[in-house]
Image (cartoon, rainbow, N blue to C red; front, side):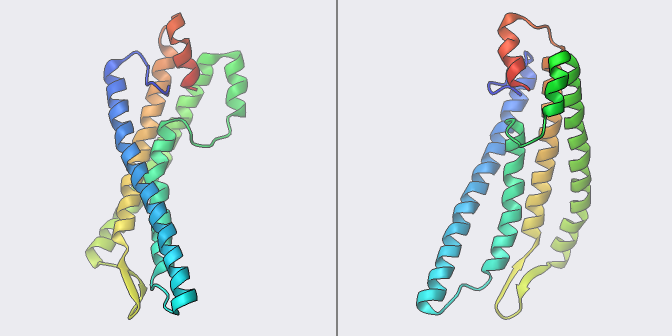
Amino acid sequence: MPENDVTGLKSFDAVFRLFDRFTALMSIIGTLAILFIMCLITADVVGRAFLGRPIHGVPEIVSMLILSIVFLQISNTLLRGRLTRADGFLMLVRARSPRAAGVLDAVMHLAGVGLVGVLVHAFYPLFLRSWGRNEMVGTVGQFLAPIWPTYLVVLVGSAALCIAFALRAAGILIVTFSPAPASSTRARETAR
């Protein structure tokens, strides 16, 4: 999608911008979690080295937060067109037929909807089970934390990623099949 969300359909652009703001907020929360991890690890190292008192549960907290951070930030990365991908073949197709390349790009994004939809479907029962049983991670007597918040973040992040794939696919198709006036040339280029 273009950076300024120009597809020519105001309603689509408004939905895209609104969802972009939501995923940007998720990404900010992920960035704050990264800062928290840095402070936690620093405090643990200082506690171990200078006070002889490590912070219990640091490995568990870090592992749960790293998983959460990925799912908090990936949908915004995709939505803004910054997710790493190999598009050499797509560039070859685009050189011969920009419209065919747009369709192929949209199909790849729709495949992403399907794959991430499977992830959402798989994680939903895990979340329900961990919530219902109040499953914990850690060592009894030292540190215990519920696992369901991490599963919830994965579930919400996966659903957001699924929506982001769908919005990107729709935006690419709108730009691909809209008339190409001179003013939309920039929009077409940034959508790819």
